[in-house]
Length: 360
Ligand SMILES: C[S@@+](CC[C@H](N)C(=O)[O-])C[C@H]1O[C@@H](n2cnc3c(N)ncnc32)[C@H](O)[C@@H]1O
Image (cartoon, rainbow, N blue to C red; front, side):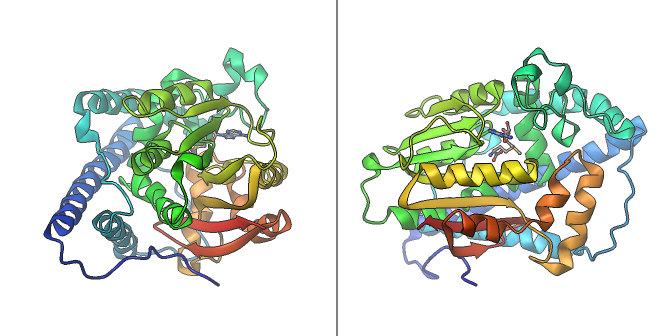
């Protein structure tokens, strides 16, 4: 199977580039330290509230802490090398807006007792009580990860990023940035002013901002079912050329056939019921131009890294992820191939799976 690894020179004589790489590595390491500490504090506070993590013993193997951290380290080094080689712009971190970040951290801790209580009682219904729940599909109106309000409230949109980064120890941003590598390869020899990229389920727009920084003139669209998350995405792009945000289901995109050059999708498919996964895939293939690029990132699946399968098994016992188990076992290759999205390359950056596909 083809593997995607960023095409990078291993040596560089340019002192500035090497300093940029070192600065990137240093700031990513600090981010890791910060989110690692937050994760520990969340665990401790959870235990104080009386809701220690549900004990589930996976039947499959799990990696050691050293293996986990080594995998994370590889991701951060690859990120820094890509900055050195000009493939990614340096990543902005939370230090750029520390007050706002700290307010959001405080919000996360304030929300914790409710979330922990729901996890203990396996109640994922606050989203269903939102008035807007009547306008979205049933499968969507749930408290994914037990987050208060699911994806349906401003409160949730403000908490999402800090919660996800805490879960991934600061690696969510660098994981998303790995998609920039195949996009940069696709863009070689193309005029970015004539290229349209659609991020399906763009959430709070973290990835769109990274794309905008790397490709200032590209036409960007972000589609999501959550109005509060799209509003957050718009705010997140402030100060840069904007992106068109589209409030719509990914299984019925209000876009013309063959109108998009690049489609990206990050951490969406594991949250979709099996039949919707197939509908979204058909929509991706429909809106892409022939020869267009589909870059996919989501959780690894069973067997991708057999020594880690126990983590995939345990995850839905800790978080409300009703479709995750099926996702980990689904024949995604078959689904994508049947839709005419042919595999060009694949890799397994920290905890995730990256696929580069082309509309044939
Ligand atoms: C786990 S979040 C990932 C968000 C973003 N891609 C990221 O990297 O953080 C899943 C996102 O998918 C969106 N979503 C879930 N089902 C959807 C659907 N059927 N159509 C459009 N968006 C959907 C949610 O609103 C949420 O923003």
